[in-house]
Length: 252
Image: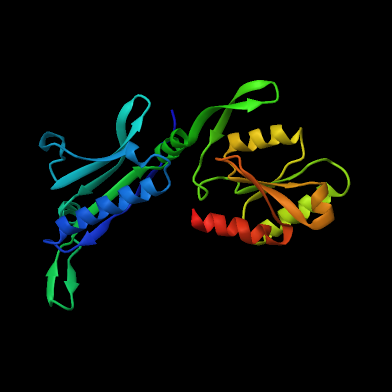
């Protein structure tokens, strides 16, 4: 069976402020998941019914995703009150009170616990990114498969493609790749197959942008920048390529 990997946080707060912090973390966690999604409407926040609550929990919300088989849990956010710390103190003998120097008082903190499955999150973004559309190909209509990852999640940010494997184009393309890597941007060099097939391959990988080195590049220093989602192409200066991709990444 698949090993379950969990991302979990314990947020400690003063009793009486727990409802406010519970609301804060529900909003913050929902916003975090939605910011990387193509379709934020597929996420929802569902409060637990009283019969679903653990005996120690004051309240609990699930962030759910609309999977192909229906709504299911992605992350749980629970107000565990002071149950964990008091139980630990009871059996360990350790004092787990916090002294607030401003209010000059001690209290056992309440715990707000967001907990999410890491691999479940990967599945959600794979489902969110997967897209099929019909486009006109060389031999008529064909299906284009695109992984529309948010640029921050795409494993490769930019692919650099020499149009042909001659006329110093591969060497120039490799120089551009190294310029990206030197700036910490994940870049890939790809010279196999026709340029159209390489575009499709990187659509399926989810690479947001492709840069093509061609004959005109060798003449005037311009290159073709292709957008994954729109398939639009425009010429930019090869000297501006790294800055332009960095700008697009920052824009999200």
